[in-house]
Length: 382
Image (cartoon, rainbow, N blue to C red; front, top):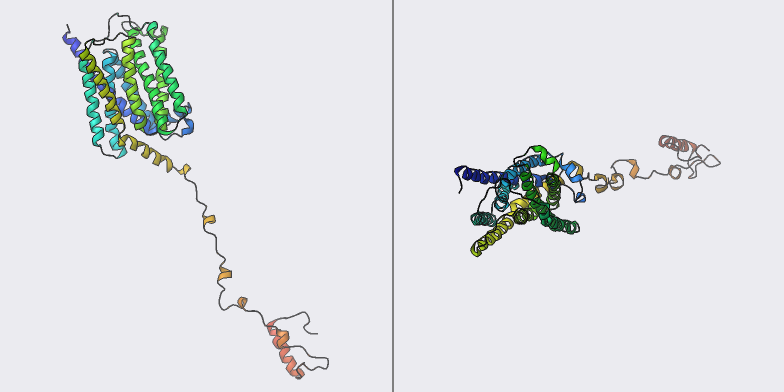
């Protein structure tokens, strides 16, 4: 029988999971807005994280995400993974709420319908589950039961290799699938770590494998998610992340932690319907034009930065015309040939007479005229 304190703890766990979803949704939008501006040459490179560490918007998104992860961990410690995972999936709704004003787009009816379908799926899964708080001295997480996580990690590796050979939205989707699988493993490791810590001092974390695996899975999932965000708009990667994480978390909750599954055929059908609605709603919401509009804004900012705009060569585009050849200046002697004064005023002959028989006085007058015009030839005065 549930006591009042147990009911209150369960209600707080539900509320904490929803607050975690709000922080995660806002954090993912801010991270993608910054990561989308990274060049594709850095895909699957560790440098993408070092570059993003210098972007304030991305750091703000990380702060939101870390806060959401902490609250999600608290909820995982008090509720079964089969209950927490559907609640955390609602972060997609809050991501859409932030993306609409950032992308300057309107909310269309497909996104609104997808949001309602997602909420309906979460409600069906919640009704079909019997909520039992996690705690006590129950022995969860025997290493022999983690073979399922190893298989899922191998699938994630294959998907990443396939995404590396693709480009654009296909690459983003495949990398997002891998990130979602890793995040599902991270959720299971979070529960395992909390079970180890329950009722013991924090020093016990340093002598167990689960906390180290949790840190590694968190870093790997973050790295894969940023690469997915940089490959294409958010609507290409977020459905894969939001759909893969709860499926893996629920599966590991059943296989590793022994979360109960309803044996009644009607309840099984209800859970299957809820999971189908959850995934359908995730896809419909994540295909929103508002989530895709974030990439266009980021691309516009990237294309208009000063270091990416080449300086045009104006001299090559507009050659200087030869104005002296095309338009001679009127009234100058440059356009007229100089008169041949030797022909107009020939010198005297041997007898002192000019060739035309004129007198020396006439010849002197003509010689003075030649002086006024300047020397005409080297034979002058002979």
